[in-house]
Length: 457
Image (cartoon, rainbow, N blue to C red; front, side):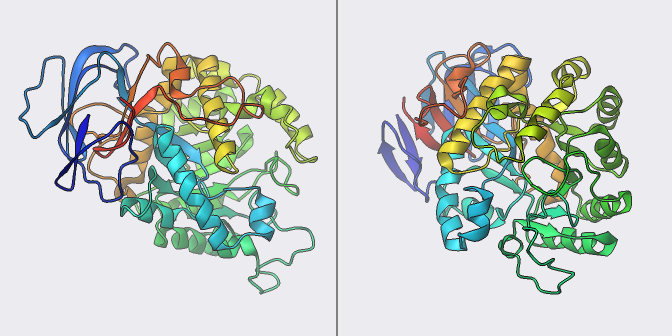
């Protein structure tokens, strides 16, 4: 196996591409293609990559000259790189550690292996839904570190007493006390903003810093102690302010929420992506299908693995049990109405913790909805969501999540058929009690933008 790197020819059995690697012309032949949209594999196809993009997809042999690297897939599956639509690449440990113990040096050092771990699990794109990941995006795009494409949201926007108001009861309010000394705000994880003017300022600040979309907290949650999960958060005019400011930059707003009343308020204000939304009902489901709103729900949130986890804080377990009970119709509604549902993990914590969670999510999603729906959510539907960023899209040359002419050459070569066996992508039936993660050996080639980052052929 050979590839071209800066004019040199390098033979290897396995390599994470050097940071000076450049895309070149590569031909995959004798591969069975899952294109991200169709349930049936396209047998014995050839796919040509030139620079960053796919330039030919053919059932016939593609003739190339000697300068093109040829990879014989020998009947393996070629598929789009996976897309995580609700990740947190900068939440690299427990929130309590981030809040009380870590500086930017601690966080930055842990973000580098985090980014690489996502890429090495076959995730070539991550929509980061809260946290200071803009710098990591710039570092990856410029070749300083290895990692996936990143669509960053920036600081989580929250009202006072909202889901991202993570102060202790004894902490001063950053605005009311006129003392901006909240550590997580200084690091860029959260921003408490009340009223139309403050929400406009916070939204515009995130966009100025490089956010590709905006994330607000429109409801409570189990991961915070002082906001009831059913609480309505942000008034309609505050949500509309964020939506208008985002639209002015040709992008959109996503919202953390759980219950129908929260969803109606957010959608009616112009929101385009429901984050979580497990207790969605028929009326909301019909509305999002009609309006083309995306649904970003992690199935691990409805699992017994989460309910029985010994790591849940004492105040969270009761809420988890309640929301799981209130969400018993979620899968039935999704199967009936077929919304634009993307792959999401909402994984938090260190590299091993996030790796276990995303591999369990692959398994659980395939178990509930079938392999094809799980794969489609993590490829073509996720790619469609990335396009909502309009002119703020940092990757404008091609589509993501599909194998077709003109799409980005973000590809996996898999030994096996993930439409039949999700474990070939790392899907695993355990989460909390899963063993320490090992490389997914059946993912033999990982390519992003025409560059090979893993090859074990």
